[in-house]
Image 1 (cartoon, rainbow, N blue to C red):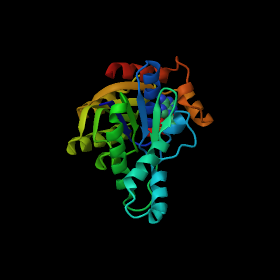
Image 2 (image 1 turned 90 degrees about the vertical axis):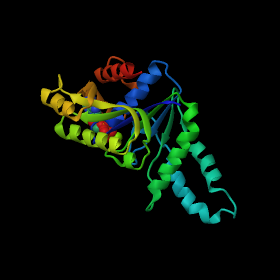
Image 3 (image 1 turned 45 degrees about the horizontal axis):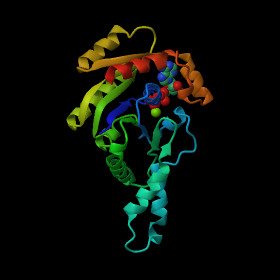
Amino acid sequence: MPFNIAVSGKGGTGKTTFSSLIVRSLIHSGKKPILAIDADADGNLAEALGLNGIKTVGEVLEEMEQKISQFPPGFSKDDWLEAKLAEVMVEERGFDFLSMGRGEGPGCYCYVNSVLRRIMDNLENSYTYLVMDNAAGMEHLSRRTTREADILFLISDHSLKGVQSGARIAGLAKELELDVKTMGFVINRVPGEIDPLIVQKVEATGLAILGSIPEDDQIGRFDIEGRSLLELPEDNKVVRAVTQIVEKIL
Ligand SMILES: Nc1ncnc2c1ncn2[C@@H]1O[C@H](COP(=O)(O)OP(=O)(O)O)[C@@H](O)[C@H]1O
Ligand SMILES: [Mg+2]
């Protein structure tokens, strides 16, 4: 069983930035093999990790929808899918990558998710670390793509709304009785120290602050220039903060 790291939280709070820097940290400390999964249909974890032109699981499913009428009788949809899905697995230096993408048509998400679950079940034993960047909101919980996690990071920016979103996600995770061993907040884009009011709001949720990440101009620069966050210098303060969080949990 891999050590399963899930990242969730309100949109735009830094889930993808954090996820990619977790991957970076794991690579740098020689922790492998790693599988990074972009489970956000509108996600950009690939770009953050310097990958371009990635085919997604959603695209494979779309292709299947189009070709299914031409499949001969008795042809196994599952075998076809499995072979195709092997093609969407990206093997990079230091980590593997899989993008879920978007499913077309009604009900298709459920299928994507059941496919994802099957992939995960098959892959589980091939990896030591799993890093999953989830969509904003709670869909991944109610659709149960996050069924279990060793750690679920609730990313919030330095705002009340961010903390409230994180708290809602935490509440749903508990309600659904997901098998999450540790759950806690990471406060991102902190200007200096975390404001005592934010600390208070988090404390009121009963969850811990597992770490904080400073606001940093270089992150914004890389974003605008479309550069991989794996290329950030080692002494970047966000890189250092994420490394500290990773060291604390592993
Ligand atoms: N610590 C930070 N300092 C400065 N900018 C940040 C920081 N973390 C994230 N950002 C910026 O905030 C935006 C949203 O981040 P992103 O990781 O894409 O969020 P999410 O995946 O939660 O939607 C991006 O433009 C990113 O560059
Ligand atoms: Mg994102």
